[in-house]
Length: 96
Image 1 (tube, rainbow, N blue to C red):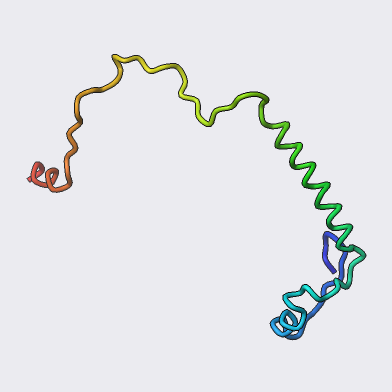
Image 2: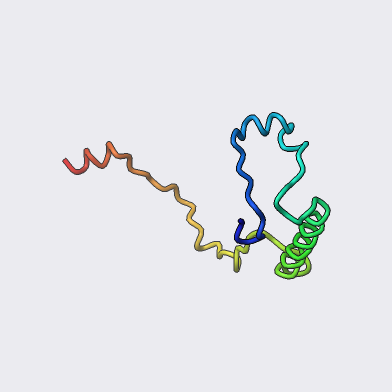
């Protein structure tokens, strides 16, 4: 018995054969539960609407941007000289 929905579990002796016989489980009726395809669809629609509302309520209204660069960077703080990068071989030579 499943703990969350109280449904009976089915034991399938040969699952691969069962899936082949039922056309990938498309041609079998659910057993061990009171739920139907219709009730599951209704529940999923309700959950979908709830989650959609949560997301809509969490996002601020109006235009949004993906990043915030903060205050503009002053030009005098921008480095314009090239940076020299030391390779591993150069470090080894320097440390000899």
